[in-house]
Length: 262
Image 1: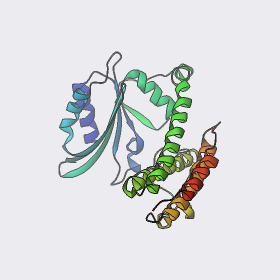
Image 2: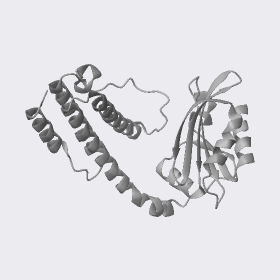
Image 3: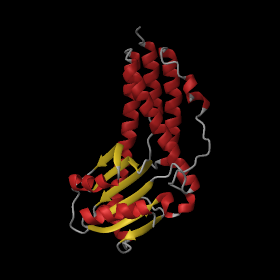
Image 4: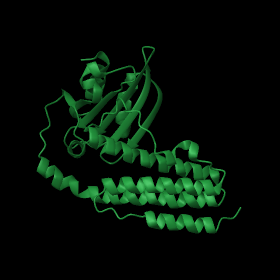
């Protein structure tokens, strides 16, 4: 076992009551790692243990000097993406700490290469998992679709009111949502969720960044129409039962053009 990985395992076993510690991603097969590879681990808490953020953070203090971090927290999962300085070397560590119940949901929704570093393999009743956790997926999908289109309508409004700062902020969020949809599509095509290397993908010409002349409202509306078309197309392909908003988005763009006020 890699010495740093072994140290992470020791720290979490010492500080937390743990059911299992799981290594994921490229570190499972060291031959596939490179300079930019991170250490991706999931800490599965023992049965009956809840997420205690302060205790989890304490466990990471011994890993090295913290440079920066990104954290996500729910009732059952606490994710940390850490950039550390350790022995004069920059290390990246992604640690997801979760309850035993949440681990079942994670395994159900994202099958991936993994290796148990501590504890026994966690046997999962797939049918039980589907019954327990699969039902919520449709609601998440509906929420995401609503959020994407709300971004679009709000973005148009901000640009038309000459608020280019917020308009650009929202527009970049929209582009990001489009890119996530494209990444999802790629994962299905290549049967992978490990993004070690890409395929030199390109944006459609109509939404290349050099097409965005954000100081012209006409140009912004043209760009947003192209972006809405691409997003709608991806949503159609990926979400069964999706109801297109493209006609309504186009209507809003046309009415906005008619009401442009400098």
